[in-house]
Length: 105
Image: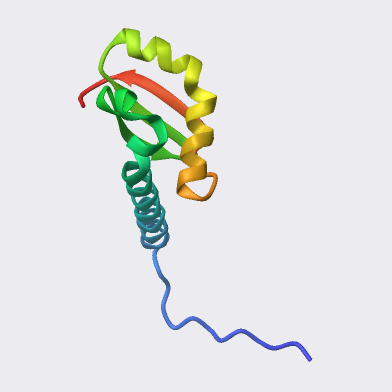
């Protein structure tokens, strides 16, 4: 026997539905970024932590502000290692890629 769905008494604007979804997604992204912040120095080491700051996490891509072009260049070589260490510390695969940029610490 097929059950009928109850009729919706009122329509909800699509914008409201999308807004709720985006807020939920943004909240989770902020929680994940906080988890990365908490283990950042332990994962990357003191010297790197003093010259870098995680700035944003979106769709598995972590944006990291770096103090200078020299640090940016050096960290490109360590990218895969940093991703692995961060994900191990956090306990799940949050970071798929890292984008380094010169920015405020």
